[in-house]
Length: 340
Image (cartoon, rainbow, N blue to C red):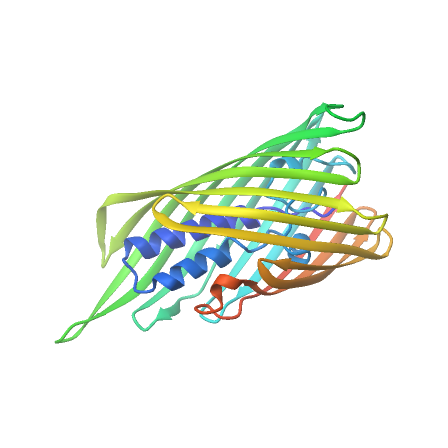
């Protein structure tokens, strides 16, 4: 069992607030905005999936799909912690999250909390930006709702999720004029709510098919040079996700996913793909991982014991959309868990 939480939900909401921030302040770098959006939505939610190409449809792995989270074959409860460091040319982002997952009858529930922040860094010659703090509480619930639908041993899981996020971002903006350069300081207080509905279907024990849809609603209150804007900016982001995983023998697993993202107040859309391989070197104890996360190479390892484990991952240039503006985007993650 390899479980952590909050990463994807947290970063999706971080991204949405970044979009709102740059739009409200009428920032000077639209291409930077779009690139940061793309890479943020491509970041993994745990070191286990981070090493395996950021896939999201493999049972016992970290997933934003609450139906996948509810496939709990081993044990009745688990706890997990996850740390991520994402290094871009123009800034870096740090995240930390923790979760508790438990079975109550036929239902599996997961509660998590996370935090993200980034330092004040220059976006371009006209602006600098940081995420002062971004905190999230995440909840998932799901379970097996039917068996024997098409085959004798098939299983259908359904799950729902909710996340609440509160964040503060600020920036400095420079506007050249013939006489002087105007300096503006802006602060954004953001609140977001995200709802997710997911499914997972296992036609046979070795194969899992899954998908989920989520919508994040966000409101942002802006303050410019000490003056609060009378209007509250509202927006939403939709994510659609489909994937599969297949066990190719006892020690090898192949998985792949497709993700589509769209924004209510922008024509920008993203179509992203993920694929990964798990290969055990020592059965049930030591595994290595390789993958492709939307054009970026990933790798890592997992060390597993009867009641716990540790995952390490590295991702290189995780999103092809960022290479011209953000440059190289490296991701380093570590996750640990304990089950009982």
